[in-house]
Image 1: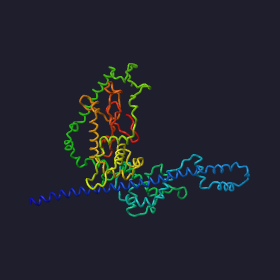
Image 2 (image 1 turned 30 degrees about the vertical axis):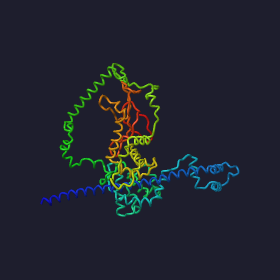
Image 3 (image 1 turned 90 degrees about the vertical axis):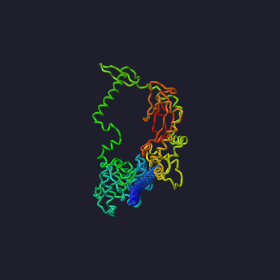
Image 4 (image 1 turned 60 degrees about the vertical axis):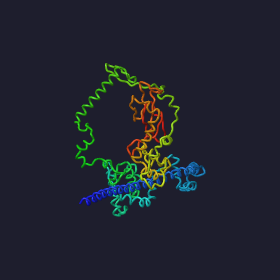
Length: 494
């Protein structure tokens, strides 16, 4: 019995491990399908926008080359050699001989300073891409299973309608256009999704409608408005919280946290906070009455005190001239400098311990860090950096994890702590720092401080995906320890 029991327990444990692994791989498959859907929607949208840009440039060039012919057409109205009784049809024939009829509308819009309708051309180009869109996106869209929030209900109605038609194999053109849900269509796009029908009625363009649903679903997935339960990356926030069944035992859960404030009555907590803030207010009022704060002036008008802030004079130089001598650099150069001094990029290891064919591209790693730290996103970063979106997505999945981000943080934090200036801003034996990114004056200057205190500023880029702060640079640029969120376009003194 004991041997059988010994064998049964590992089998059950192994079954649980296999089931958990299969569930994780199933969610990964769903993630890849959703990412493929997003990628293909991006590609088709980018293709249409590129075609619209090229059409706009061609129209501008073509109109500019025919301005001379347009001038000759206008001259026909004042040409004295043409008798006044000449029929307009013959004058129009002469005008068409100077400028082709299909070019007159383009040239006239150019002369009237009417911009090219890029949005209209873009949506008309989706009709030319309809076969590729249906071939690439329909099978992915039909397999998506998701939900959304209340504000996305009109879009979800359209999603359910299209998925029902695609799963049953019902051609969309055989459905009555009036049965399509249209409450989600933005008002600004209605002119592009409807075409003239019989009489004065307008008819819905099915191909454009279908791609609009795909595009809005893509936007909602990226923004978190639409989520997938069977996913690792596109789940809703509530899926990572404590379940309702476990929350029924909230007393035991709160007891594990060992936070007495959670068990204290809320009236007692509020009373303690009230007394604390009252003490702080009395202290501030005392300093104001005694004139301890030079930035606040007290004036008495009508027997009542009035507080006024003291603003610097226009000619007062807030920043010391020393900081004006430090050139600004872009964040990419800052990252390369910090990587060379700290080696934090070595902390980003591949998710697979073995069978890795090549090392990570350092440019892609830095681009992913900036994309997530500035909340720009991988797609926008790919457009402005010249790197492909697919390579950035692959780099993000393979190298950016909570463990690797923590390791990179440790590498930079250790390098920061080793700087000679690191301890100059300590208050006593306590490390003094802040994360608000501001630089304020102090009443007392510390040594080596031309403008209110010597500072060690740490440039920081926050990792949105992992929720941790990835410190990515160091410079002497402020008046007190501060953490600054740098942007992609440049690094200016705080």
